[in-house]
Image (cartoon, rainbow, N blue to C red; front, side):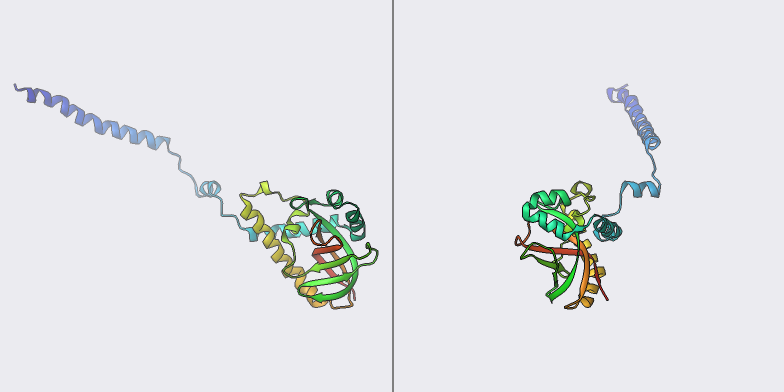
Length: 218
């Protein structure tokens, strides 16, 4: 018998063993595999975040919180003149470096309507104070987001989502409040306003308010 012939049986055995091993591995992998239901797959792969949908759901809560927490602008303005940072800490929530979003309310007479702003004469404010209600692009969506103090950066995946929510809140306010106010709040009209003022923005005697409610008397 030749040497080559003597080596054939082990080779044949090896050829027979490998398929068995491979089949055994495949069976083991199959037994170890968990097949997920459609619901489980959805849970593991949540839908892409929609700032528009999120803002639509949160906006009514934000409006309610701002109206509930709103402090008379006369009280806030007096405190701001004395110490803007202390006033912000007392009445509002952080809205940036040394800035605070403060819910306020006031009544007054429309003195001017121009370029998306209502200038309101409000009695009882410190001398020289100018109050403007933003019903156009000067409105501050970040102020709306931050004023209640319930939405934090840590609650979002990234800065883009966090900022986009503010943009969508602004868009909703412009659609639901500002456009109606712009049509109704003519010069000389008496208005009642609830909204958000951000400290340490603009001139010291200027109060720019992003509204959540503008009601015209009469």
